[in-house]
Length: 526
Image (tube, one colour):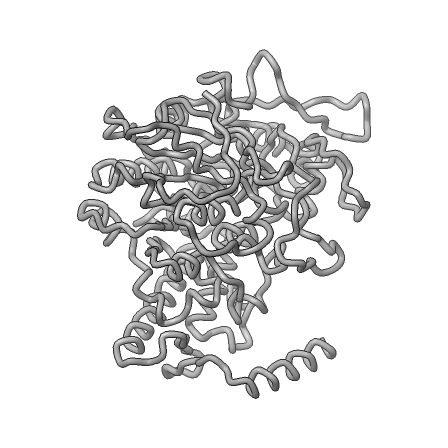
């Protein structure tokens, strides 16, 4: 069954009152769900009757080919997924600033992988999971909906893409930006839009809430919107107290007592499957189930193969910002296709969502579709940027006139591949883990030390990092609660950089004026 979104108009009559979003890490659609075409031929995936491949060398017409297989391992190495690597994967050649963009060939995955680590293409990048290896997704896709045309918001790494999920822009960032991270990304988010219209939201975190990358989310007024997942989520489900918008942040760090469940390569996908199972079953048992839409999506493709060409035309720059040299990226093309599942009792079994029907002829599903759909379902006052105004909305996946009563109550459980050893706690950190540590350093006050940003993580292993970010947020959260309870201004942000609790308040006009002068002076001499 194929469903498309409608364009324009509000959806105040929508039966959906709670939208739950889980954003997982670094997997392409073909890698995770491509072989699900065997279950439903409507899915634009891969099949043995139409084998997919990439050449070892894109410049050699006689190059040997590496074919896409179905032997992915639960615990994989981490392929290349930098801005430059993705350019080569999509266009089949090293980065250049040619304009307009060439046609995306999707034939550079093998060439890029072999240049980074010989042998990685055949063993990792060009492998996917057969449905039986992902039994939670298998049942959800058969019972509910999958979108086979959801792209990451830009061809880059984790954090810029995650910023689009809640704000429809990365504020000009296409990689880690430690300077902006210290100040906090300033753009308006859908959290504020929901609040302005009288709706509620909650962030249920496990390791560290990366929503704190946004400056506004550090304010005292939002401290009560953060909840420890294991203490609060199931209880709120059972009591029927979930807010209108629920963000679930997975566990990003792998330790003996709590394995990472974000699906980032080197982390066991069985843990990610069991997290989705746990969330689904809690929602299914909730009195709010008949008003709920659960969305599972991945932030970016992580360097894994996908055959669907990436959209490179008609993609609007969200806010006019341009990335810095040497790439000068205009934020005018999307990233690689990623998995997206949509789950609700209002969805017919086996639904497949393809390209959206508007609002523009070039509109696509991408991470900005989340704030766009929130705006439509809850009739919010305004769009955040030109990107969510353009993005397709997935509200039409609600394709029934009444909720189903036959939705499964439980899902299969995957046994853990093996126990985590101390050697895995001592693994080197991923780029995203380093960014989370840097964000934790900011709220902890360590960003003023000479170890920030790079020396901070010298010799730090996963177990050290997990402890560091947890302690940082616990301290920040506790001091924020105290400040709010004694009546501090709700727009203030706790500042722990001086060893004692201070608070940053909104600046006066003159303070802003002199700050701008200082910023301009620093930019001249930087």
